[in-house]
Amino acid sequence: MKKEISEIYKLINDKNIDKAYFEAKRLYQIDSENLDIVKILAFLHIQKSQFKSTIDILVNFYEKYPEKKDFDFYANLAVSYKSLEEFENALAMYQNAREINPNSPLCYTVPAEIYVKLRQYEKANELIDTGISIISNSFSNTIHFPNAIKLKTEINVALNQDNENEKILLDILDENFNPDIFYLLAIVNSKSIDENLLKKAESYLKGNSRIYTNKLDRFWYVQPILFGLALYYSSIDKNKSESYYHLGNNETMGSLRYDSFSYQKNINTIIKKYEDAILPLQENQKKVGANNFFILGTPRSGTTLIESIIGSNKNVFSGGELLSASSLIQEYLNKDDGNIDNFIENFSNTYISRTNYIKGSSQYIIDKLPENFLFIGYILKILCGCKIIRTFRNPWDVAISLYKQRYVTNIPYSASFFNIGVFMANFEAINLYWNKNIPEHGKESVLDIHYEKLVENPEDYQKKIYEFLGLNPNDFKEENRRKFFSQTASMRQIGAKIHQNSLKKEEFLDKKEEFFEAIEMQRGYWRKKGYADDSSTFFGYELK
Image (cartoon, rainbow, N blue to C red):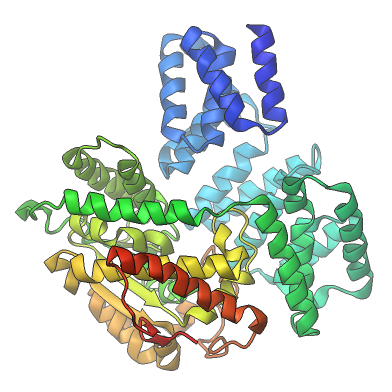
């Protein structure tokens, strides 16, 4: 057994997670009482984002052997609870782990992430400082360091101390060049990159391009420099900037795969299961979710701006981009024999419980995960009292904005104008479906906002949004909105005055035809399914 366990560790070190997972499950079936196998399988469940399975296997084993509870037990439970947005349980597990090993940086950095989500920024700041101190004195060359520094810069923004970030990043780069820190500096203030630092970045880029031949390694060590240089040259040399964006996105395409066919298949499953499981509205359901607001649409379509308008209200807590609704619905969709009654009860109880904890004493909570657009019908059917704001923006402006963001793993289609085009056609198809098929009560629960109209007339739209949500329009204060913190790619843009500078973009024009051809190609598929028509417009926008 020791030899087989050793082989699994080798597979993990070689990043062959699927094979390691298969072998670990096989060994677990043979000997579920072996602690080493339990720990390995729990770890691999986490790597495959199977967090409930991690919790089940750990709880099942340690209930039998409570004396064996150690740091790994609490740390793995904490990671799993945090990923499921069971934040109260996660914080308790991290506290237990910290008592066993107070020198583990993860016991400080990850709880700091949770406290940022809970908008307890002072507590988050205290924890991240401790975590960074531990990392700096131990293994600062690991991936934990740039992640911790990134979180520190976000906390500084939330505490209105963004001016400190530039010095922090420059001091780190002066001591030891790091690709991720260079990229962070380019985001914070690209003008602070001087000639010496620029030469370091370009030299480091050439060296890394030779050293890192593995695609995944290149993604972590080459891609951030390319995006940093793209940001640096954005106001100096447009052609050079676009060239670096292309190179950076090519690295992403080489290491991350966006399976548009899988996405398309999932939409078909969403529609089929919704039609198979439509149930009459029960009287006792009508007020469920009355304190929940959803903001959704394509990424980069104005969801964060709307979040800042609503979230600045004293009665509203913004939970940011919560994954619970999406993951709970997707879990049901992935089951061939999922019971709709059990699903509805589990979803409403679990989702409401999680969001109630996050919002604390606030009356309302915002869930701003853009891709919840996939599940509009389900959300309205289960959380009948909720309100949904759906955003639209010129598709070419969205495409450019997506392409210029360094999304690490969460939006892989953003690395290609072709894939963005396919995504936009998929977005159109499912939203056209919901327009025709949402529950009758849902028609008054959805407000559509076009980004261009919002930025052209923010005062009127602020009142319109507040009235739709049942908030007092007079409670809004622009100065509060500009202080609002959102942990997204729009984090630093939100603090500025609402403007129209990002309309009708004229960039990457050599890719424009490819983008619109991709939309039209994917539209052809949805026409055959009956979910798209021959319209020359995209929710009112000309496709040209």
